[in-house]
Length: 117
Image (cartoon, rainbow, N blue to C red; front, top):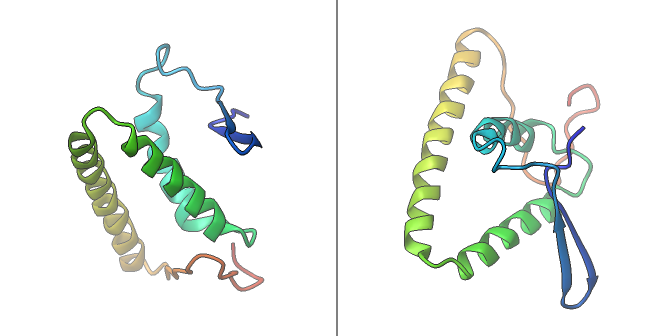
């Protein structure tokens, strides 16, 4: 098990970050983990707190962009990368549908039926 990202708040202004990932040693780890993150966010992020988890992820993104030296360039890079990922995910979903697999999408804080995960 690896700690991808741990964010802890010890006080109003004392927030600490930790990870087991070393991008200096493995620069391709980020691009390798993005599809797994997307799949998990699309399929297995169950537990009832999806709305809050996603809100905190977006808060991290906003904070990062807010202190970025070149925010516009970073937003463009994220837009392009996320567009490519969305295209790949949609193609995979369409392929599954063609193969007879029914894909059902649930919104945040919507628990799946008890017989599905």
